[in-house]
Structures are given as C-alpha cells and as structure tokens.
Image 1: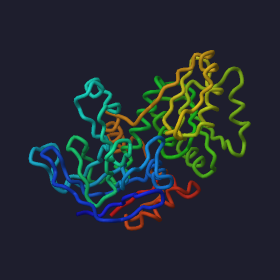
Image 2 (image 1 turned 135 degrees about the vertical axis):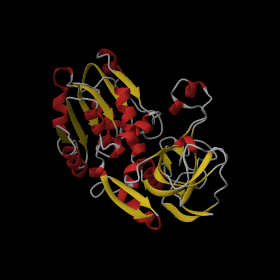
Image 3 (image 1 turned 45 degrees about the vertical axis):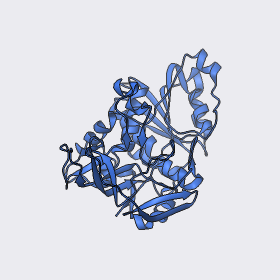
Image 4 (image 1 turned 90 degrees about the vertical axis):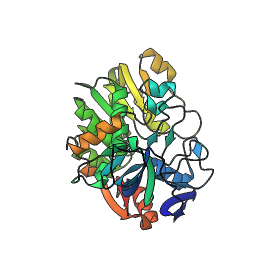
Length: 346
C-alpha cells in the first residue's frame, strides 16, 4: 500500500492508501520527489473533467513528476535503485503505426498518467510510490532539484508546440496565455531564435513573470484589449501564434493578428464540444492551423536542457507543499495572482 492523492469527484480530493502491485520485469517503482500540479489536474479537481474526458471512477492525479528509483523489475538494466529520474508520463504501446512512425504521442493505445481519457482510467503519480516502465525514466544529476526535474514534462509540451510552429528563427510570435505552458513556450520560442515574442493574458501577475523571462511586450486583454487589436492592422503582425489558454475567445483573437501565410498552433485544451473558428479568414489569408498534443522525443530534450542549465525555470516555481496538504496546494495552484507552478512533495 502507498498513500496517494486521489480524486473521486469535483472538489473531492482525498489522501488515501492505494494498492501498488509488484513491478513487471520492465518496470520500476519510483518514490515521489516532486510532482507539479498541472492545469489538467486543476480541471479534474474543480470540474471533474478535462475537455471531453470526465471522471468515471476514482483516479490518482499527477503526471509532472520526478523521483528516486526504489526498486526495479527483473529485466531492468537502464536505471538502478537510488538513481534520481524525471519520469515521462507517456506510456505508448510502442507497436502501433503512430509509434513506429515516431509519433508516439498519437499512440492508439496510449496510457498517460492521471488521465480519464480511457476507462479504466490511468492512475497518476501523486503517490508516495508509483510504477513506471523503465524506458519512461530519464536519469538526472544529483544536484538537480526534484521540482526542476519535474518540469521536464511541461517543458516537453512547450517544445513540441514550438516544433509544430515551424521555423522560428527571426520570426514574430504571439503567445496567448501566461500560465506555465505559455511561459515555457516563451522560453522555448526564444531558444528557437524568435526575434520578438509578445504574451497576452487576463491577469497582471503572470504577465509580470513573462516580462521577467524575456517577453518583448505583454498585453493584459482584460484591461486593454485594444492593444491586441492594434496588431490586426495591415492584415496582421505575427508570423506565429501559440494558443495556450484553452479559451475559445483567445483562439478567435489570434487569427486576426497573424499575417497571411502565418500559423496558429493550438496547445490549450478547449471546453467540451465543438469550437468555432473563422474559416473564411483562415482560407483568405492561407493561415495554417495545427494542433500540438503532448510530446514524444521532446521529453528527453527537455530534461537535458534543464540539466544543462540552458533554460531557467526558476521564475515559474512558486511553492512546494507536502502531499498531506494537497487541498491547500491545489487552492494555491488555482490562484493566478499568487502562483504559477506549485509542486507536491513527500
């Protein structure tokens, strides 16, 4: 048995014992070091669902995790007990056509930590100990803080989104949303050579962080929507737009500020159902509209960038609280005036 943070319904999060089976030959048991509370965790907590995925049974939350290998299956040689690891929450089948084509994020049988996309649900990793396949684990330096290693997952999401954006060297980029993913997209876009990055949001506090980490300009669209509208002049300003809010209104605003031949990348999970897009504008300006779903090999790249100090995620790390105070941690993580990224620890 191990203690875990398990969601039963909206606002019903319990710290309770769960059964941890013995590892299969290719699996390891990981002792939690740090687990980041993601927007999807907050959505399950607040609404009992994420997008089109609703809770149908109790589920352990958590997929942004790092920890220490506690024990290994009989066939595991890649990692050893006592080793510190960042854990990729993706568990693809490795056999379907998408996995074989190098797009494992689109795996037909994906098992992703803490997800209600399938039933029975895939249990997450906000647990004293959890199971992972050995190939999900990436060793990290002993000196690397666990909370930084746990940022490998959201950074991988941002790297994949920027990759779907295409060539960014010398480009003008706008990012809708200055939450964790939007801010990591800002870092990734600058690393990719973007000439100028503008960030938008509805709140002042995260926009201040965006300016701190390199945004050329920030726009509070709640207070001054006309500042974003000014970018609509002369058929748009930006070469690339990244939507990282999950807001239909934010998405709609981006098509008018992207110049002809530009690209809009959808990262945010939208509310359930169909979302309208300005199809005539998309057609007349030949704007590419693409999705970016999770990540694949970008996870190892993200961990290596963090380990090498190529990206500093310190400004987005707001707090660490023990798992026994998970309710308090979730409340803090949901308060955008006080926090960007909150981590659970043991």
